[in-house]
Image (tube, rainbow, N blue to C red; front, top):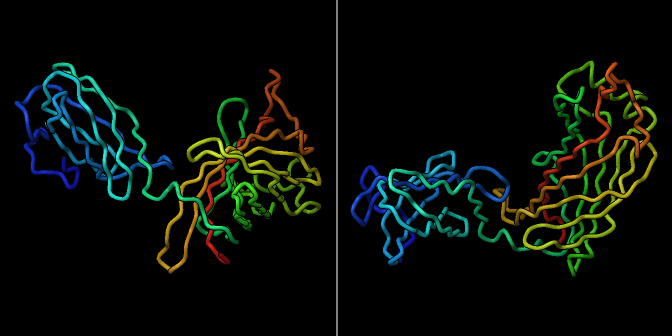
Length: 288
């Protein structure tokens, strides 16, 4: 069975059996949650015959129509990604929606080689989200940070260190950012740096890892757990080798002596006590 480039097909995506009025659709996503453009959806009927093949658009959406009612195996392929198969049932005149289908990049499961990997701040981000008035979320980021990852052998012996310039908090509002730098929040004149050092790395299966560590902010050091996802290793256009990962952590402001407690008459806090931290990094192999 050839699962290469899409074959020429009629406007309804049909390549084999007599046309019907059913359809199958999907949204194809990479492991990082971004759409994978121009993915290919191939439909195999219960007899093992290929009955349709359609190519998706630039936003990751793909639709194969003109299908007779029945059970099908849907195979999603995309250049540079591992194929994914799903089973689905198509009813006459209806569209079976596979929803978001995640495809993993080929080689994405390869772990980074032992050695020193330097975080590239230009292609990385540290974002913080807090609730405002219990209604909406305020998003901010730190514009200056640095760090390194020392991959061990075995990988569970790896060490991650990061340093954040607290003065570079940026929520897109100058007045708010100036307030965040005061003693009410980050107190950057006294504590200009936020630091993280890992204390353990544990696999959870697949590309999921638990990264344990200690976060130091405002002179207080507390244990934190980062829900981490490893996104793979690959070459860059400058001849180097890069690894990518993302992580999420939940922090309590009062754990780090951030006690700003202004609230409404109803008792709702002006700024929520829980912070959500989203980290996306690329690291470059410096010394293998």
